[in-house]
Image 1 (tube, rainbow, N blue to C red):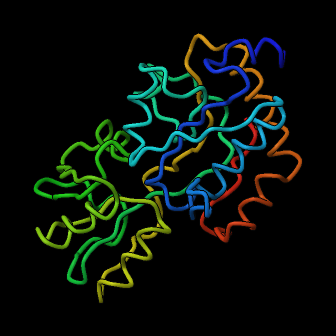
Image 2 (cartoon, rainbow, N blue to C red):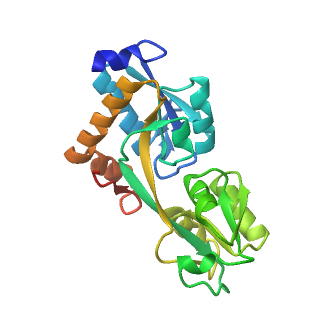
Length: 242
């Protein structure tokens, strides 16, 4: 299987890795050489080592840009959240970790639970094309989504336009709440964002190799160790095996 997977790489000897810099839990820093550091880059580097090739990081500001690049053959594997819309162009492996998503609401908000937010006239700020944006686009019945570029852009929109809620990942929302006195992160979740490896659909051998690696990484405790190593314990959870 490794040899079959290697034959599917566009650049022999190199595993091109699509990395979403917008996820500050999975990419927590930059090396002196300018390469991304964090759980996601380490997972990709370990897979590359397993295949006997070198990783080459191809970075993007948002997950939507990572998904768009699939059609342009810019990466061999990508590390972004599993989402049905993205699965039209990306073959996802089983997830290796997950992050809960909920809402931040202002101090005077009447909302007490996640379910309260989906009501007529409610305006929600969200990071454009994030996994939870795509999820809410499918599931909200009444509330309106107002999109901005990235998490900082969505928070600024939420504050500047005095919107009713900010959709996001729990750890990031808790940080936002610290800079907005009286605001609250609602208990519960509307979804859990599953993070995974994805390949281009035609790369079936590479997909199988990545799938096997993720199963071993979860079972061996590697994912848990990387979460601890990069200081995101309590923010990321190891995904359950299917």
